[in-house]
Length: 326
Image (cartoon, rainbow, N blue to C red; front, side, top):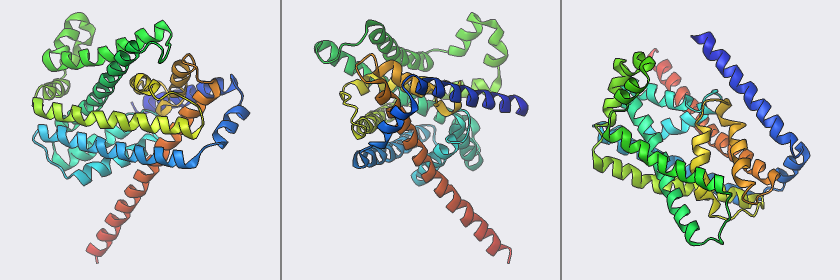
C-alpha cells in the first residue's frame, strides 16, 4: 500500500513537471519570467491579505458545520488546523493531504472520525456550492449584457453545466441515497458502497440541520468573493488587464479542476485550466500562465505561515514536556 502511494506521488510529480514544461515551452521561459518580474507588489500584498482572510472564513464555515453535528471545538484551534493543512498541501502530492491532517487531528481530539471526515468533505462541497451559485449569477448578468464578454459557446456551456451540476449533486447527496444508486447502477462498487465506514460517512451528511447548512452556505459567499478578489488583485499586479467579471465565471471551474488528484498539488493542471479559460476570453498566454503561477506562490506563502505556526506549537510542546520530566 505504501509503495503504491509513493509510486502514485512520483507519477503525479512527473506529470506536473511535464505539464509545466509543455505549457511554458509554448511561449518561452523568458516571457514568463519577464511578466512575473514586473509584479506590482502592493497589489500582490493585497491579494495575500485577501487570501489570509479567505482562510479565516473557511475556518468559520468549518466551525458552523461541526456545530451542526454537535461538535464545538475552539475557533482558534480550527483556524490553526486550516493554516497547517495548507502547509502540508505544499509538500504532499494530492491536494487532499491537508484535509487528511485536519481529519486526523480532529479525530484524535474528539474521538469521532466519521464526523471529522464528514465535516471536511461537506466543507469542500459547500465551498464549491457557493462558488457555483456566484457563477450562475455571473452567467445571468453576462447574458443580460451580451457586450460584457463574448465567451466561446463550448466554454459558456461548460460553465453552465458545472455551475448547475454542483447544486444538483448537493441536492442528490442531501435528499437521496447516492450509495444505493451507485450500488444498483454499478454492482462492482458494492464492496465500497456496502462498507460500514463509508455508510457512516454518508449518513452524517443527512444529519446536518438545514440552518447549519444555510449558515455555512452564506459564509461561502464572502469566501468565494475574497478568492475572486484575490485572483483579480493578482491580475492587476501583473498588469494583465483581465476584466473583473471573468473571475466569478472561471473560479468554480478552476477550483473543480485543481481538486482532481492527477498532478502534484494541482501544479500543471491549474496552469492548464487558466490557459484554457482565460486565453479564449482575450487574455494573453503568458499573462494567463503567470497569473496561475503567482496564485500558486500565494498559496505556498500562506502554507508557510501554517508551517511557522506548526513549528512554534511543536517547539512549545517539546519545552513543556522537558519541564514536566524535570
